[in-house]
Amino acid sequence: MSDYQVEDNKLVGPSVTFESSPNTGGRFAAGQADTLVIHFTAGSSVESAVRTLCDPDNSVSAHLVIGRDGAIVQLVPFDMVAWHAGKSSWQGRSGLNRFSIGIELDNAGELTPNGQGQFLSWFNRAYSGEDVFCGVHRNQKTETYWHAYTEEQIKATFAVCQSLCNAYGIDTIVGHEEISPKRKVDPGPAFPLDKLRAMLDKERADDGQDDSVFEATSKLVNASRLNVREGPGAQFDKVTEPLSLGTNVKVLQQKQGWSQVEFTLKGWVSSKYLT
Ligand SMILES: [Zn+2]
Image (tube, rainbow, N blue to C red; front, side, top):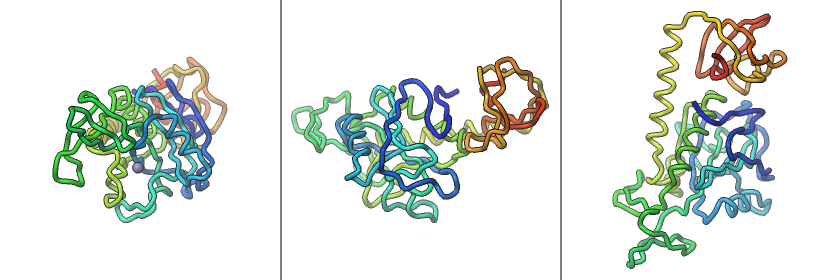
């Protein structure tokens, strides 16, 4: 289960802060994004990335920046378009900003060996071996050197992606390098993108099994306030006042981490707040 939740198009969870970027293209046309795009910042710190992505003189932004310690800064609400993908296309659609949530990871990007056992970023910071990943980029043929992501950062990224997929029914995660292969190399081979996709595919398959063997059961609300929505996702409108802790509900069906429940009314709630 993920440590993060989505409330009113904002991420809620450990070490999450919000700083508003003016660089947005308004609301998503269809009401929500259906794709996640993973990036690296190619920068020196979260602070410098946030400064750049919030500067009105730059036409760039992202929804989230995830630091090397796993701390997260959200810059744009999830129902608003951010400017992270640029010229891009994927499965017949172009201009992915209009369909996607952009996640930037604090990472220096590609590194160059200096011949003395260290590796240099484009901004000339030296990294030692333990911070370096050597591998073949999916769009290239030979081994190259990349700034390694930290375990905390990868863990936070996986958990956030899981929460966003559940909240918005998202089932496509791509790297910037896949939607703009001629211009971009992020997040690069140091990021376990295929593992992330496999983890989320497995979760969906497990959920599917739940559906087929499901029988109506009685459960208790285990959150202090539990929103009840018209459909299985945080993007659906609330149907009534939140349910309170200990309320008894009958679960009618389940779908992608959400349960349709009956009490005096009928609606959808996040399954993890039912015991
Ligand atoms: Zn990018």
